[in-house]
Image (tube, rainbow, N blue to C red; front, side, top):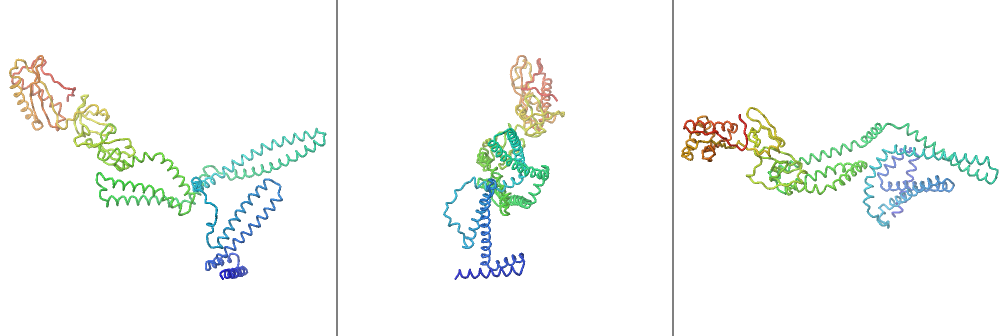
Length: 564
């Protein structure tokens, strides 16, 4: 019954189509068929069958005609061209018959094919993906390649025509001097073949020259051609590229928003030293953002079915993957550092550029600080791969001084630190003289910091006639005199400790040492206080009639000092 129904429907449909052809134009006929197909799926199926059946008959007729032409022609080149056309028509016929079978059956019959499935070839599949981009580049360079091919063809035929001309002239010369009939027949046959070949080559040469001249007439400058190609490319794909760029911005925006939400709602995200779990979450977030930035444009190109841009994206990804292949171990170490389980860890101490630093924060850009010098340095995480840190203790020194401290260097220069950076130190002494030191030179000069507290040692010698009281009465009397003098001149509050002790029995004197400790707030008066102690000591000797032998006073220092 079903077959009868199909047959009747087909007859009715054919009569309906014929009636419409008699009453309306071709365009109206197409519209009517379309409307009928929409309202009746069976009619649509039958219409498609009729179309493919007509196409099959047309292909069979063309194949038959080509076979006849192939049998008649004697030209090898023409035969090859006809064979190529015949092969293409046979492939189309096979495809048309397959479509007829599938449409008639109403299901996919490919599963009935008993041929074994082709083995997966990664290289072949990869080339299939990038083929549209390659075709686009081939199309872009088609003009240049065609021009180059024509140049080679013109040169080829020009050279061979010269050879043929010479050969024909030689044969004609032989014919003029030949008297043998048999030889003349052979020479005529050979000459005619050469002349045919020359005529063919002349025709090919003219055709190539004509095409070459046409190309030259259409040829534009490289800049104009590039501009034209770029304009055409962006006119076709400008919208898709814009959508791809917008998708990247959208992904970055969503990434920022999600990162802000994580910082706000995840406990432990904003603490100074974050846990391994929090760091792992952030690392996964960054990696996913990076992956989505790459995949986003590819998804756009896939949805809009722009296979050229999709293929170009594949090529970029292949290049990126090839580069990444060599750097995976390097990035793997950075992952360890980011998770705070590598060779450098937050809160620890390391030495970099000759300075100790505390690792305050590890991220894509890490923050190092020197607490004493108040220096901060930002270092990319890749620079930490070869470094090592260690735990630090609270009493470990970080820097010999800080800004506004007074220091004395081994070269005797005493000044106030007014400029302090990772590379340079600037000092100024009383009176305004400034001096610059490179950081390495400054540290190698072993600076003594006077701004905390400092000690002054001065030695005074007395005569051997005072030997009896030189170890007890005289030191105490001198100490009291110095104490009173310091208070009188306004240094009493800054004087932390004052001692006078017997130092040694020298060649011509008995030496007493004055040991005075001062607060760091008078560090800028270091030399003035040293001179004041000398002066007070001489005044004490004069008041108590203590003889100062020659040399009258000898001051001992480990390094020379400047006088204000």
